[in-house]
Each structure stands twice: as C-alpha cells, then as structure tokens.
Length: 149
Image (tube, rainbow, N blue to C red; front, side, top):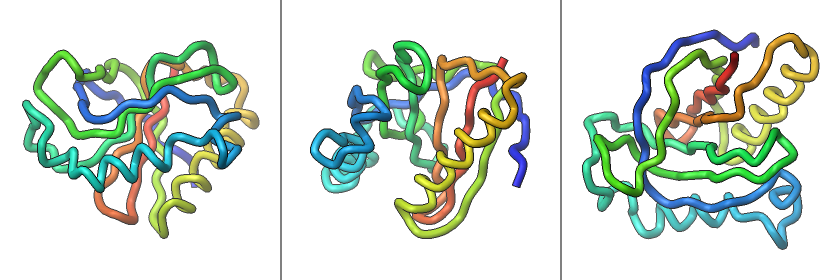
C-alpha cells in the first residue's frame, strides 16, 4: 500500500520522552521504546497530562534527530496539548502517511520496515528528520506520518 501525502499544521504533544537509536532498539538489552510505552500506560500518563486538547489519539513523536535513521533521536509518547514547557512540537509541512491495522507491537514494527523499504526504493523523496509521528486511533490502528521535503 502506497503512502498518502498530507499537509499538517503545527501542533504539540506532551508525555514521556526517551532518547535512543534504531541500533539500540534492535537489542533487547538496550531497547527503550517498549518500556516507555509500558510506563505511559501503567502510569496512565494520558490522564494526568496538563493542557490536553480534545484530540483523543495517542501519539509517538520522533524529534531531536541527531542526523538520519542511523543517529540518535527522541521519542515522546503522549497526547496532544495546547501548550506547556514539556511539550514537543510537530512541525508544519508535508508528511507521507503510512497506515496499518493489526496486533501490537508487530503492526508498528512491520510498518516501520515498510517505511524504510519505501525510502530505499524512492531515493528522490527526501525525509526531513525534524518531526515524525505515530497517531493511534485505537489499540490496533496506526497512521505513521513521516516529514518530507
């Protein structure tokens, strides 16, 4: 399934953040993303986040990129907010949107594999590496938004 190009305005997300790399995530001894998501749900961070908007989706925001897919990045797991000092900004611009539905976490892992394959097969499409995000409409449905030039 081909991604759909969409333009998004800026918005903010707040929650829990960890810094990691794709290499670290491929080793269970150094992986941080699964534990971050578990903490988010166990502590019910979505209930206690101040300045929450009416947007009911849960987000995984990738930002603070050191370089590209090989460098370090921040992942913020959270909810849309109207502001606050802990919020991370989603930059306005064009995004390629990859959608999937299925069992977690395999659905998301498979979709990220599809994303990397897509960009390998389409080298003329340039990722911005500024802000990318996963938007969850439920426990088994995701839309991953990749910022492009």
